[in-house]
Image (tube, rainbow, N blue to C red; front, side, top):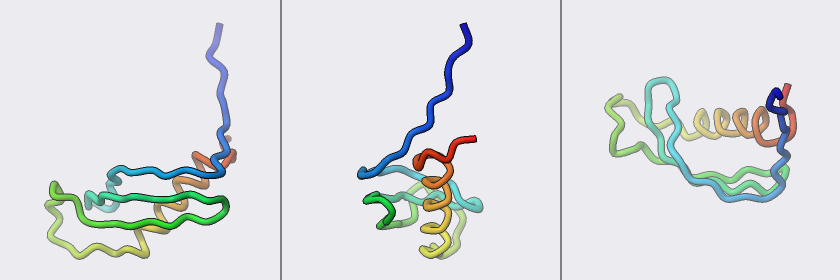
Length: 75
């Protein structure tokens, strides 16, 4: 039997984690309250990029991930 695919639509959630974005390791904490996403970002202590954090870019990347994976838009 083949596993079934499921699409999730998250309405409310708080998530914490680390993203890898353009070679930077970024810790984040985000609150999803559909359709809004509020998030806080800081460079991970493990980041070795030497670059400043672009919070706007990080938010856009997180919103894209949420849209593609947690809003029921699975393909």
